[in-house]
Length: 353
Image (cartoon, rainbow, N blue to C red; front, side, top):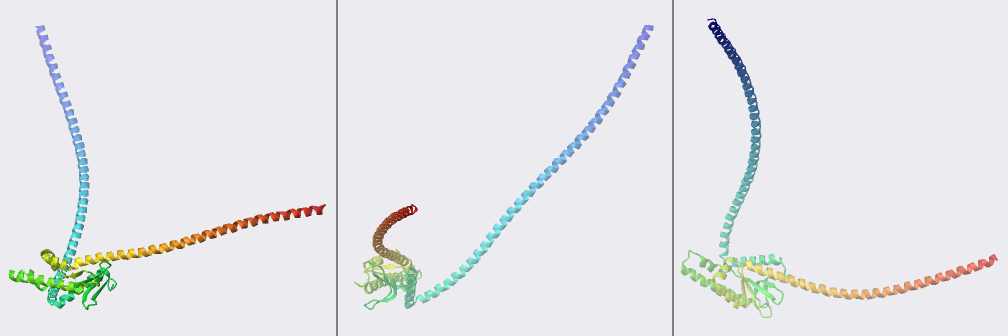
């Protein structure tokens, strides 16, 4: 019984101790868990604070960078806008200037149209066309050779047979004197190219146009090609480029007829080219003439210089001879001086004795 009671007491004691240990462990664990929870909460708060602080710093830094970048972009955009605005302004100004020039040109075109209409009304008269051609010819000649250059050309020149040419060119040989006469066959030409006329009327006008040209060629060949006086050729001047182009493009038989008659058909453009070529030839001839004169003068100067050299050599030899004589005289003078000095020395020695 006693053993049983002791065992029971021991069991009760063990259970009590286990219960106490359990209570002690549970309270300790709870306390540790509380402390651990507190530490974790604190660390979490610290982490959240640091994280918020870092995020704030990063956000502020990012905001600053974005602001700087936006400012740069804004500056670039403003700069580009200013440049584009300046270019646009210049372009707009240029467009306005060109529009004003176009407006002025349009006004001039309108004025020119009126002038052309008035010119057409003036050129309907044959005498007015003749005056127009002569003035155009005068302008071309004065532009190439200068005003009133009578040594090269003369206007309204009268030949010995009494005929008067609109212009005469005094070209160098072998070309010689060339007569230039202005012709303006406008009436039949206008009918020939007028689309409003019937084909029959235009054909009749074409025949008359060719006939007019051949008559002008014959007149120039018979009046202004004078054997022994002028060159064997003359120039017919057409003051209208359109007529000249028509003849060269569609009426080659007229060109061949003019060649046979030794008459050269020209327009304002071709006449200027021809006269410019002749001007160059004249200048080259003048330069060659002056070159021969200069060469002749140089030959004369060469003879004079050769005589000058001969005389200078002779004078140089004379100077050398005089110089030698002067040296000889100087040597003789030295010798005489020494003899006088020697004689003086002898006399002084005798006196001392």
